[in-house]
Image 1 (cartoon, rainbow, N blue to C red):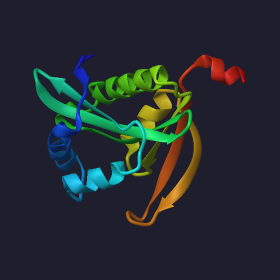
Image 2: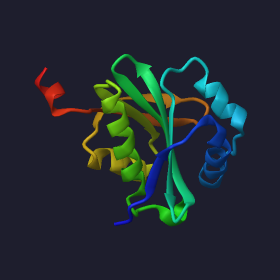
Image 3: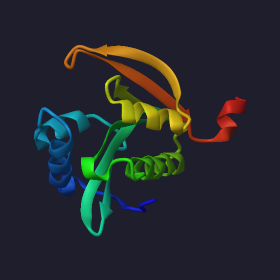
Image 4: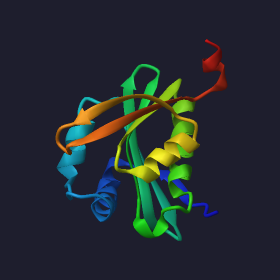
Length: 154
């Protein structure tokens, strides 16, 4: 198992995330796409995964509502998939969210992104809903996970 360096990155490092995003996803986007998404958001968190100082993955999240943190986007370069980079990114994001007072973490993934569906299920996320993404003409699967075992007892 690979152990990447995971670090929280500042807004000044957004170009690195944009470059990674454009290597992983289509259609390509620019910085303004990300900045628009962050407007009015509370507790925006961007994390970068690196191996030998080379960025290989990222995750971005923000507060969805009080006590719920939303993983908006996660990506790992193709050559580094299935090496637990995404798992490490999510674990770091979970830990950050938990220490910042969030009780749940939520994410959505397109139905066609099978690897992310498998990862969410493997990490014991609960499937909590679906919605149609008209921009991509695909189904989004919604997952949620408590950040503490105490929450299940409520």
